[in-house]
Length: 458
Image (cartoon, rainbow, N blue to C red; front, top):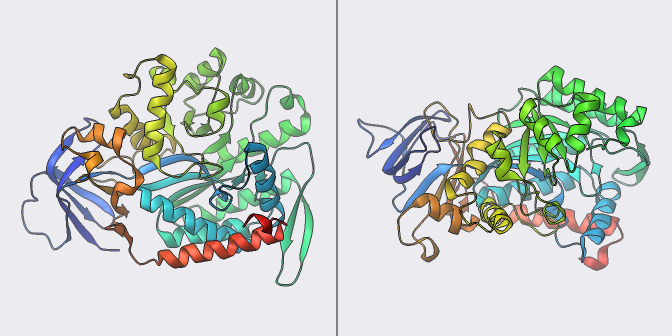
């Protein structure tokens, strides 16, 4: 990592408390942190490596607060949702090994780097509720791969839903064994991962996940005990507790039965919320990851603007790259605007500044990292992206906030920097072989498809 880096001549969208936009400004980075941000050139001499960012916007790295590990290698598998769910479940449970999860992680990080996403929060598994926490090896392989790629990540690990046996296939060099996975075993593995990775790498955090249970399920004593165990372990370690799929009264039900939520709770989707749900969010300080590109946003509506008006932190998530999406957070900003503007028949809903907040500083707040990430300010981690604005769809050069939120896409990112380390410059990865990452992912994909009996779909 370069010990000092000076970005010059950039239009800087700081996302600081005053939401300053600086013209032809500078950013000085030393030892992974921002030490100066200002207009014009930097006074005095600096031995820093220089980047001339004329014609570019410098802004905080984007923060994706809800996605899934594994989905990069299940894109396009299935003609409709149910088909994709069945295929993905079969692959995750019966056809993967640690190399699958390592190769998929590198591919996922590659897309994020090229789209300007410097931090993402991922559940380790998903689809039809196949969480790969029956043993630590797959998650360890994923985390090691992410560490090598240089991006930041929050990885949420925890149990599957109860109610049926989950049978996973574990491979050796010459054979495999089928094992029945229990929620208690998954909680123990998740706890081990949280404890082992605490403090190991300041770019990676392992936290707990818990399925969303409705009021009727929570009356089941076994489910209640599982939820309590995860809740108590998350609180004892002061980690995030991530849940995927709250809707239509489930927040209020979990609050009443479990007292589950506090400011370290992060909920994805949150569609068709009741007034009681909204009251719990407001009272507890729990955060919301809005996913306008997700299938759940077709089945119901997340009242993101209304929640923000209530003072609730609402961030943006992609829901990952399958079955029909990408990790492009610019696309999600655009879709969030259209999603709510259409609902209200008012295109003033979610103006450009608010959208950028959801993708940066509000994302950092949702992950409890706003003291370190989400804005370009002295003392914060140097997670910075440079956007090439000298392009027809981003021209003429005025109102950079509007141009970024309304017109930009991931392919406009020229440079991605995490903790002062340049991961991509001029759209070329630094210190990584993009072709090798793609080929490794293809090998893992083909092997998994063959193991799952899906070779005819490759």
